[in-house]
Image (cartoon, rainbow, N blue to C red):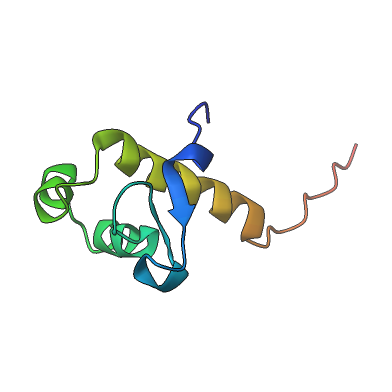
Length: 82
């Protein structure tokens, strides 16, 4: 992915108890991910969390995609029989 999601997040002890949030907001990344998992659209998320930008939403999705690709156990690649 070409999106730099690292700069989109912050973790501060004085904001949401140190949870990972979208930078400049009090919106936890896990809250946005849970809303997406429940089927919320971008428009619904932006209405519910007006401080979250479209770039912020893309950053959350990029973060989830990267996390999943790094953390999921993948089955071994089958051997090619000649």
